[in-house]
Amino acid sequence: MPETRYIFVTGGVTSSLGKGILAASLAKLLQARGYNVTIQKLDPYINVDPGTLNPYEHGECFVTEDGAETDLDLGHYERFLNETTSQANNVTTGRIYQSVIDKERRGDYLGKTVQIIPHITDEIKRRVKILGGKGKYDIVITEIGGTVGDIESLPYIEAVRQLKWELGNKAMVIHLTLVPYLSATGELKTKPTQHSVKMLLETGVQPDILVLRTEHDIDLSIRKKVALFCNVSLDAVIQSVNVPTIYEVPLKMLEEKLDITVLKKLDLAINEEIDLDAWNNFLNKQKNPTTTVEIGLVGKYVELHDAYKSIAESITHAGAVNRCKVNLHWIHSEEITTDNVEEKLSKLNGIIIAPGFGHRGMKGKILAAKFARENNIAFLGICLGMQVAVIEFARNVLNLEGADSSEMNPKTPHPVIDLMEEQKGITNYGGTMRLGAYECRIIEKESNVCKAYNKLTVHERHRHRYEFNEMYRDQFVENGMVPVGINPDTDLVEIMEIPSNKWFVGVQFHPEYRSTVLNPHPLFVDFIKNSIVEK
Ligand code: GLN
Image (cartoon, rainbow, N blue to C red; front, side):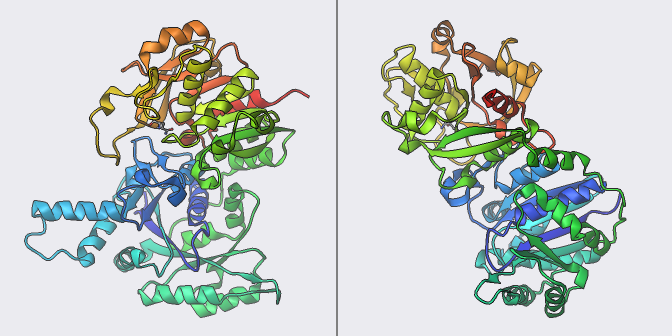
């Protein structure tokens, strides 16, 4: 096993250029050439994790098996690599400072003045190296959040400078920039890239490879110019043109020989054989659908698609398996009313109600669950989505007036969704929910869920404080909404289903965190399959 190599991915010119997708695509290619790769994200904000961040601020919070609340890029890493990540794969400035301050309080620094250099930078380096070392990963790709030049990023870039110095050709930097196209003159402009590299050089870091995001092909003369101005070899100037799906990016990077250039620079063997069969097979199915389906995603953050990233990607995976083009309709829960629910939802073949917190948009979600149930439309309620389905059933089928979740109405006469026992008395918001993977036992063999999973024990990831209230279990069963999955240790209800409907499932967990390109999630696959209407 070779000594671990470290690749740092930085970004310049603007944010949102897709460092996460670039890191994931490169990792995919290196994995396909036989290397054991992981990806880490360093986020320069002060929050200890994104768990307390509003999705409008930072998009979805991705939950790992070990219950870490992490950046949504970790979702891409898992979906591309088909491997799990953990808390170690996402570190924020808040977490770095927290451990340095804890050490200081313990007296570990022996009376020294604690400073950004070396104490903060040492802690950053330790967090990077934790993933490497003997018997671990061959290659660790570390994505540095933010844009070069941000004040917040400085300690990270400094840590990268030091690591490059310490590790020599066992470390390298890939810098992602933008080459804008000026339509007035019909030109691609490299100046922003030159400036961004200059800024990186000012901090003592020479990038080894430049990846240029562009809307048009970058010709040889521009590549030569960038190479010359930025001190990189010509094969290290890589273009990344816009593609219709993120899953094509690895193939584009392969065309550009990004993986080969990386392996050469890191002095690693180049396995000529690259195993991308399963990946290509997926893309083939995605590109050649034989049918179409209309799916509505009802949530309160729909203006920002990043807030539901993993759900959207899971649907993409499931669509490909079913050779089905999924038209995803983002429906704002606050805009659904009794008067327009028919108009908004009747053309849909399947409805998903998204996870969420707080009462905003609850009315619309409950109307959507009712519409799906009464019209026998395929339905998947995720976390809050399941809770909504339960509340709707309690109000309209069990006739429990005012039934609610005690999260939404603490005074409800019928708390069909109630705070979990272990959550009572918790006052801190950060990292205190029921988080991470738990076992779930499927107890109804005839259920759609059992058929979809095709097994009786599954593990799924959670992120919630409230649960189905056991006191109402019999009433629900008698009236046709049945717990089909339970936690074997605590008896918590994890899955509800209405067996008399075609496909109506609510899950207390988040199946979307486990769907990958090579392992699409069975519940999404079956949901899409059952949404498809025979023509
Ligand atoms: N707000 C609900 C709870 O805490 C649902 C959470 C979610 O959808 N992730 O139980």
